[in-house]
Length: 318
Image (cartoon, rainbow, N blue to C red; front, side):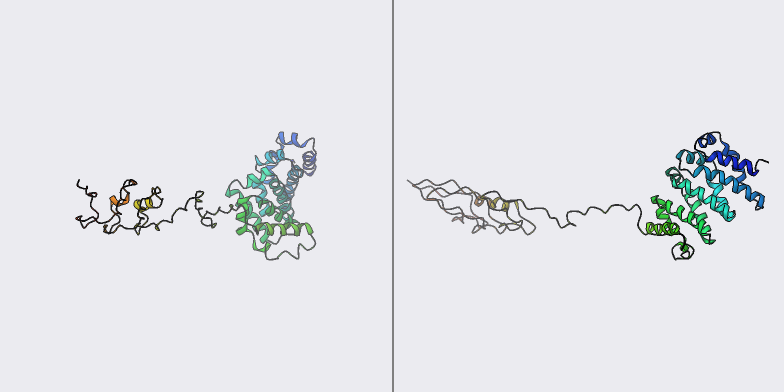
C-alpha cells in the first residue's frame, strides 16, 4: 500500500534534502499526503500513518525557508495540524505542534495566523486545551514557544494578555520544567512580554497652558513708557478700557514756551458724569507770546450746566 513505511520514509528523505526540497514542493507531492492527515480513526495503523506523514512535513519546515512556508500555507496544513493537536496521540501532537511552531516562526506564517481573528483564536483555543491536559515537558515547550512567537504581533499580544491559560501563570508547571532550562526561559520570556503593554500610543503633547507657559508681554520701546494694563486708564469703563481712555495713554505734544500746560486726562470740572466732553479732550491752538494764555477748560459764564459751552471767549471792544 501507499502508506507503507519504506515509501513514506523515502519521501521524508526527499523532503529534507536541500537539493530536492523545492522540486518536491513544486511537484505538489504534499497533496498526496493531506488525506493521510485527515483520517480520524484512533486505530494504531492509522495513527502510525498520520505520524509518518507528519514526519514528511516536519522535514520540510525543519530548515527555515519562506518559500516552503508559503507553499504549505496555500494548502491545508494548518487546520489539519490543529485537529491532530486536539485528537492525536502524544507523539502526533508533538510533531503537529512543532510544524505549527516552525510555520509561525517565519514572518509569513505569523502574518497568516494573525490576519483574522478566526485564525488566531483557532490556534489559541487549541493551545489552551492542550495546556489544560497537562502535557509532557517536550510538548509543553513547543506550546510555550508558539505562545511566545504570537506575542510578536501587537494584536495577538493584547489578546493573549487576557486569554493566556492561568496554568502558565501560577507556577503549575514549575516542577515539570525544572530540568529543561530552554522551556523555563521560553515561559519566563512569555510572561515578561505579556507584562508590558503592546502598541501603546505616544503620550499627547501638553498644551501651553498645561505646561505652565503663558503668552509673553511685549517689551516696551526704548525710552518709552510701558503699555498700560487694561482697565487702569483713567476714564475707562468697568468692563474694560474705552477708546477715549486709550487715547489718553499716549502723551500729547509738548507745550510751547510760556503756555499753560494742558490738563491731564482726569474729568473736567463741570463736565458730564460720563467723562470729559468732546471739546475738552483736544486742546486749543497754542497762544501767541504777547497774548494771554487760553483759560483752562472749565465752565464758561452763561454756559449750559450739562458741560462746557461750545462758544469760545468773547472779543474785546475797540
